[in-house]
Length: 419
Image (cartoon, rainbow, N blue to C red; front, side, top):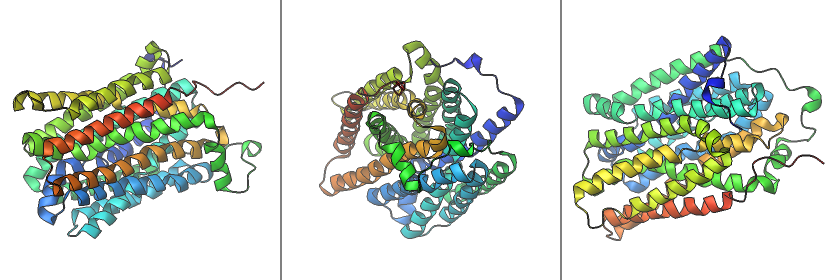
């Protein structure tokens, strides 16, 4: 059972920790989505095509995903304070490097550093919540953090588009780099580590790899892992990369119009992430809610793939923005899936459990980013019209999500009780 929002009674210290993690997580959300708004300018200034843009976006997710393994170990052995603050230094350096990038290699390196730097933020927060709260409150706090963290998603839409139009994308990114450095210092000063796990509760395995096997081996978790790898990937790929080029090439949206559409989708993701936790309480649990959201989001992607059809361009454009907004609102089931998986992780493996699941979220997104970039490039080289190219891409997103939802239907709500 998921507790409703009024049941949350945090102490002052808990509120402070939540807000500090939120401030850091806002930057993580910004960095995974900002490229959709600056992609056109970046391509024009540096000569990047869809394949290069897809790879630049994907490298953030790849390095973020691979970093989950050392992050999980560090959370269990070093603690969230030094782990989160230490890794975030790379994000500040990467943002500054991106602002001054003049080549494909430099842009790739910058995004790789940003990905590594952002990798422990949400996991550090979930580690603290998981060690200090029960399952119901963990779900609520995770949903609130993911939802409110989408402020970064919103900031990467219309506000970034306006800043880029006024000052250029380099100056805008330089300012973000400075703000990221401030978040690093705030995290290091304000976060406190939970009490260590008692020695007898810790794993007796000889290696971190053996501990990881304890997380991934149980078949009962595999349907959750499949849904984790697909559900966020298609959402992040759409919002983080293709919403801008799609609306520009198919419907002729200018920079501000693209930013407004991305803002609407990001706002829907914020509302959805916060609202899904109490909605799950009404529907009957996280699993049922994720199943419903998976089906509805998949159908929205299929509808988006069939646009513009025979309708007028104006109606098709408005419907596309509406469908993208709906996808953002009902597709952001990340926190519910993480809470579902958290039920199966023992305390001494909580760090590695949540980071492995996050590896699947982000790793799936990195793979989809790269493959989709190659697909759009191939379509352009083959002379396929933009509406058909993006239509096929969205149909693929919808079918993949519906297939993952079918697999997820085989999951269980809770681990079996010991005999």
